[in-house]
Image (cartoon, rainbow, N blue to C red; front, side, top):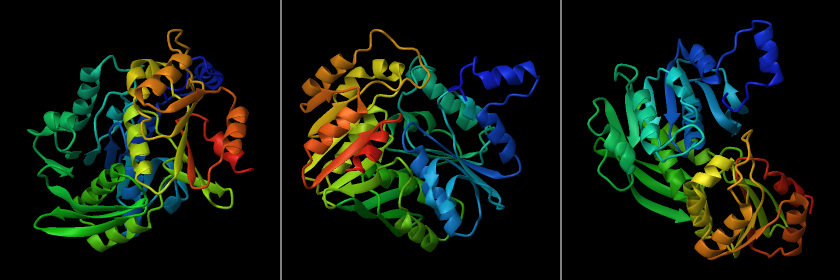
Length: 383
């Protein structure tokens, strides 16, 4: 992957010994060549949507091959070599390598600029999605979120498309949403009929994820009763609002989430705000210097639904530091823009100690970020 630098010792040894080196996406494309591939792409929600679809297809007995970016209970890991005709995979846009894929169905969850280390601007980012959708002579079915204006502008005139939505007329339309303390139910209307779905994972963003997965399954001819059962039983993916445990006699929840883009953080904390917690404490570890620099103002505004924020050092993910990116300035900006108390602490042990000292019954402590901030969950559970 592009996360591995060219001076990695294994890469250098492989080159020295003339061993073939492949991009991960190139290898996956090789594995997919005799399968009908369903690729899930988009800025947010790829992992959960892929996992939901995999759970549905497994429940329906199609025995799909699966590659998903998190631990999925239904397959006992993040990859499964099913013998059926389908290959369900995330399509990672971070370095454009998803262009190796040749999907039969392409599911697009949303489109918002990310990976500023690789893409210079939004137009370049949109262009790579359009190239991906149209590379297979426009034969691939493209199912996209019609509530996303960028996707709608890109694909509304494309032939062989289907849409899902909460707010706009579409092929698959969500109606009558009910949220209750981390669960929800809703109706998905299509072809003059509907299906009632229940979820045990929180947030409007998971309504979108499940609607996308269910719509894809319906396009593929999966029985709606299998869809209902699979989504009701779906318990989530590792590091996506993952309940790691409870402390203080079961009155404080310790949760971890992989959110690392401002929009993801806002959606996550909005969902938590609608639950029955008396206090929301977030521990945020920014991911990459380039992302922190590019979305500095957006990050500063992302924590309005938190009661207290601990901010820790940037997880570089192999990037070199950018001297103009100041964590202390981000701390001040979060306090000002999100109007919530924020404290910068680099030491995970000190953060853990302060969290334990200030525990409140009915609180949720949620670690946020794509780095190693989840270590704090493990430390908290030793309380």
